[in-house]
Image 1: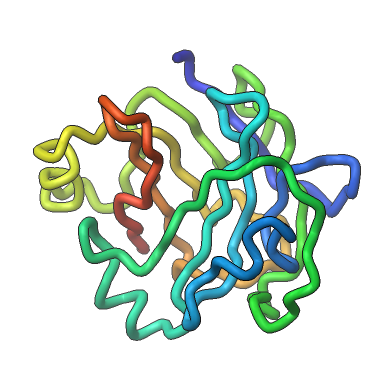
Image 2: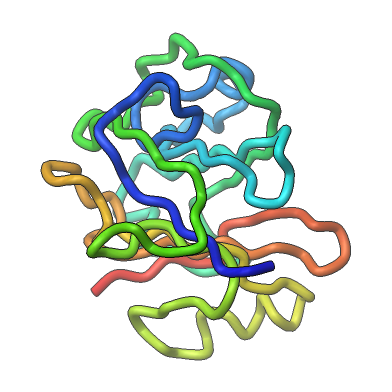
Length: 180
């Protein structure tokens, strides 16, 4: 797959992908008890699927569990769904913003979402990805907080989240997250 990019935009209800707000209706009752909705993105390889990302609502737990297999970030693959009603699953300081459709060029001054290619690591330490590669996962995409729209809360401490794809099953998981 070629590298693809997406940017963070002012909320536009005509775009399906977004960061923040209430979770999609189809997953709102599947989110674990201590987790909140972070984002829903278009699956870059499956036109009829989306990936929702939920994160633990306690920063200490999130910090202690930031690397596979013990990462407090979950990815849920699902069909497109309208915004649900679960306000208790919102990250209130994050706000709600749209995510552009994928493009082959980064159309923003800062990186927000990068699909494919090599990850751009904040901390280039192999212990972040060694276990993933050993378990047959490859880098899939990253979400960088440097590409957030002005005024958004940095839930990953001005960091980045890295998703990985299993080379046989195609399952997408949260691999790790880093911060500067």
